[in-house]
Image 1 (cartoon, rainbow, N blue to C red):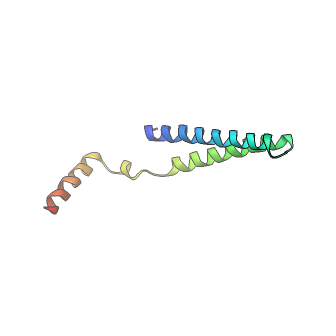
Image 2 (cartoon, rainbow, N blue to C red; image 1 turned 135 degrees about the vertical axis):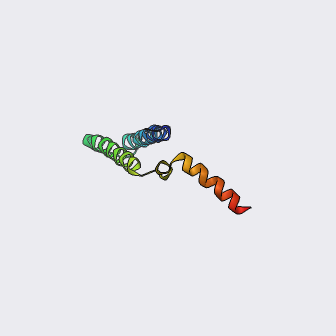
Image 3 (spheres, one colour; image 1 turned 180 degrees about the vertical axis):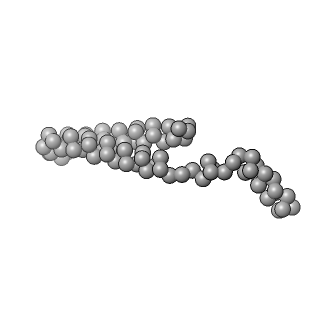
Length: 83
């Protein structure tokens, strides 16, 4: 796992935690709901977090598909062609 993947997962978790807390406050103060609604809200937040996390992990990073030495050579060659 790369550093940017870890950063994404931590950021996603914090964001979804904030959304969950806001939903709990709204349900607690302004909207009268049955007690099971809190459980469903929590399950929905967890499910959405998992789906987004899996979706993000499935996306292929194009930079990983290229060899570093070949990429460096291509950059050098493209600079020479431009001149």
